[in-house]
Length: 216
Ligand code: AP5
Image (cartoon, rainbow, N blue to C red; front, top):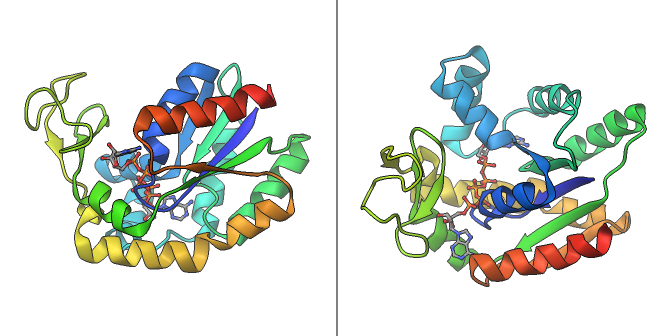
């Protein structure tokens, strides 16, 4: 199975991806996570990517497509791949189609998590992430048991630099301009399934599970 999770910043792609990949045995590939890891390790990719991420801009397509090509070389999870945050431009989507065609693979479904902008700002401004294991929380919607401490590993929780209000506004703008055209792109290919992302985390997961159970 090859799935794509599409949606604006803060829609809950990462939150859902964690549960979906576990239930369906998929390799979760998050381009945002890969870039943040590279920044943390001071790798050349991270140094280059940081300039874009901190401004709320997209990292150039060529760099991102290279990362994805490399990941798709692996066997994936037993059930396949779950792409989270990729593709994000029509050019990336076209490159993915070419890479998959070369491998004799194709996309099974693109799940759009739909949430309105006011709610997205609330979600991003309250998001906290574990410095050590990367687990995600929300100060109101998904609080840790102890303030600023990760339930899973005890690590310190922090707020992402690109979750400041100015950068969030720019990320929303970039989504509307560069990523939203993918909705039409995948609709035209009969691959798009939309879920109501305004429900609680469990409600969204139930709706996605129903879609995926019907695909299997
Ligand atoms: P990336 O990390 O992919 O950021 P994003 O797409 O903006 O998405 P987010 O991680 O902000 O949100 P999410 O949808 O995963 O929401 P989450 O589950 O955390 O990318 C960061 C940057 O990297 C980009 O800006 C770009 O510069 C670069 N980049 C990455 N990929 C790229 C690409 N392909 N091309 C070019 N550049 C690229 O949830 C958010 C919060 O809400 C959390 O606190 C969570 O607990 C809470 N929450 C989740 N679901 C619910 C719910 N149902 N109800 C209530 N609260 C909820």
